[in-house]
Image (cartoon, rainbow, N blue to C red):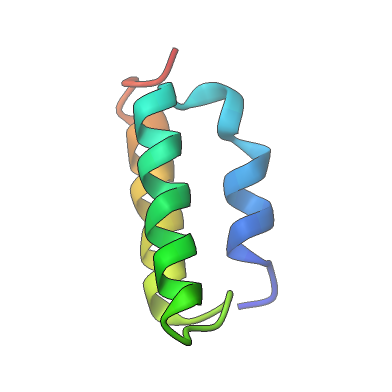
Length: 60
């Protein structure tokens, strides 16, 4: 995949409930702190989760 998942999450941040956005950011921060990379499958999973929240209309 050519896009950056963190950048993509940032692009839809306004459409996400604050609690969801904070949770995703904390999960990614914890992942990175434990040695994970910003483009690991786990971070892509967080992007898919965010996109699903928006798609299902659970955003603002």
